[in-house]
Image (tube, rainbow, N blue to C red; front, side):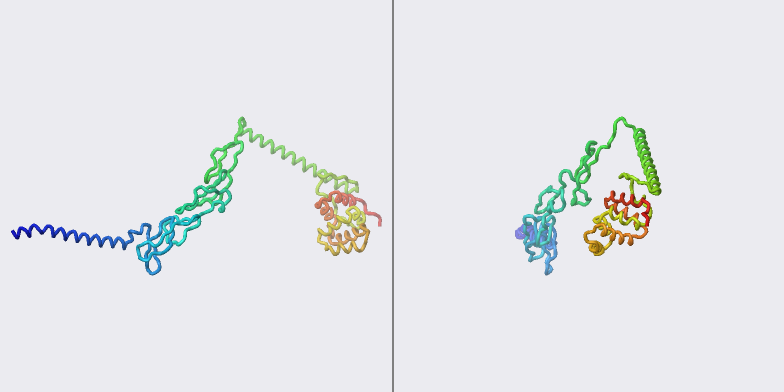
Length: 322
């Protein structure tokens, strides 16, 4: 009977031992899991003192660090106008992007959220002109006008316009028209240069013979008609034709000091003719052999063509008797 009783109790004792062993194994496994950081959902970071703290999730930032490894410290949601798009150990969130401050033509596509930055897009009529992930430059779309749009402007591609075609005109006809236009242009240019060459020859012949020549605005430049001559015999006539104000401008434009110009005026008070003659004399001495051509060119370039023509006419006269 005794043996029978002991035999019947053995399974109960064995069962109890088995349950206790399972609990011990389970407890050991849970501690190992904790040590491996299984409860740190988004990973860990190293903190002062050898602590390993859990990262705060997206949309949060660290307000206080952990005091035990493999645990969370204090995590706080990002403030308005800030975001954190990834698990972080930072103690503050990043500021949200402002589309209007990046570039003209950008507008907000999606507002900033605690776990995602603002998304920008180009305004209507613009497309993104850079190839980076975030658009920072918007460019106006091409306008096609009458030919019409083949592919509309969108996102990162410009407008593609239809090809311009002319009904009833073959490629051969177009080539013929172009050749005809070029021929007419070439003929016109040839006639123009021939006319200029003939006029120049005629004026040079007239000047050489002392003839009076009339000038028209198309005959340019006048300096090409002026021979290199001595201005001394014509100083009084040239000074009278130019006048003090324009002679003063010629002198100043040629680098003559204002003190020299003023002294000419002071030497002949109230007599602009003599003032002009003296200043012209100084200018001619500084210009040297090319004075006649330079004087005509300066007057013509400064918009005083009428006075430049007068000088040419004076130089074409025979020298006055000594």
